[in-house]
Image (cartoon, rainbow, N blue to C red; front, side):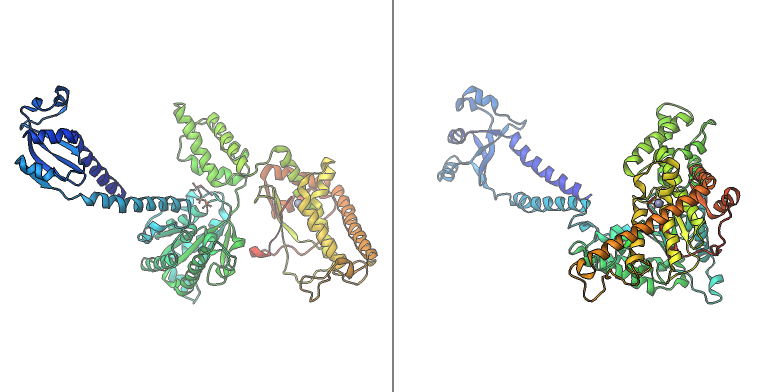
Length: 632
Ligand code: ADP
Ligand code: ZN
């Protein structure tokens, strides 16, 4: 608003000075002197650079030529305003006296020029700063200093409930507990239990992290404070920390409530990783303040902090310590069922024609997150409206799918059916191999939902217990599982794909370690060759550590280990081909197969019984213990 006013004032002043000039008739200085001499001048104002005044209207044509007189405009009161540019004329005053004309001096109107001289550059500067701030440059957030409070959004009612969240039931159930805490804190405190302070929601963009946080507030009926981590970072030194403090003070006043920090990674990046000069200290200060506040406040009042990130790996470990964000909830892109449920939730808001089959839409959109699906429904509604329809029909949805999916293909990878089949058999290969190895970790979940940038699918194994020592037999089984994906592709398609690179890397590394470090190869013997980084005197060159002959021997042993593993896995998968096919089919159909379903398949299709092994403990395993086989 301020800018509009300033602009208006400047414009007004410019206008005024211009109109002054326009309404009076311009005269040549010589003409003015002539008129003065002949007594036709009424009144004169002598300015520093101009002379203006009024003329008597009668008898001008006696002095000036006809066409000049016509150009002089006169008012109704019989006077004709004029102006002329002043020239150096020392006799002017004398002549004015002689003509008996009333004359005034005029001080230069300095205020306008002063204003222009000072304000214009300032305005320009501010304007540039504003532009920079928008782009997140050095002076970013300059204008926010005064209104720091305004950016912490407080909603007393979010109006979102768990009914609005679909397809992420596990995360929802976990947060249900938080809702209970907020509704009913005494019940949990009764026995001296400590209510959790912070919950970190981890997941790719658009999977509903914010939505879930708002739903928790909505279900518990408590106020919801939200702020984004990236906003803290754009601020002046000290402001971020002050705002964190301020937010906690505010929150404690209205407790019970929820504080939601979006993009925690922007603020909670591990300290010591040098960022932008200057920005770095500020971010560290803000992070420290957040840690201090989290330690300092008393959960018994019922303030719970939820935070969201899609890059948990870069967070400062201090944030994840007990008493801070010690609970983690992982969200994934939804599977087929999940996508269908999310579509249903969003379809409530639009009018659908009866021929619409949301299950079919869900089947066509693997890899899309909740936000994409919401967008898809909206897109379809807009299309239908543009075509003047009363309801959203199947064709509208189909077109919206094409649009959204085409847009997605650029952003992330959506796999074509052929690739999808390859991925399905690849992952099935890992899983089946793992099931038929006595010493391998049990498979918890197989999925062909693309995850991250590199992985087109994954097989998740849960270790039965924490392990510090591994036996040779276990390492060999692990190597088999790494190779399982590749071997399945080979067996089923008779062709290889590039997708197994990561697996092969892991298998090779493992083999190299076994031979050169753990002394697990009889031919190479008990010696360990490769110095670890911590060795006090690293060899200058590899050849100084062992001979060329030994190097060849090691390489030969690595190749032999991998080759043996290859033969073993091939035998297993040949034998279990029926199971492999069944699992791949199930994956293509449902995208994820959980342990229960996998076991059912094993019972039904396995050629020989799977080796008896300790099964996965029934209780949930902490996220960090889950070994993921990324890559496909
Ligand atoms: P994130 O914070 O993970 O980036 P949001 O929570 O902002 O994602 O999700 C954006 C929108 O996508 C939500 O407002 C909602 O409309 C839709 N959405 C995402 N996930 C779901 C879900 N599981 N169920 C229903 N709608 C969802
Ligand atoms: Zn793989």
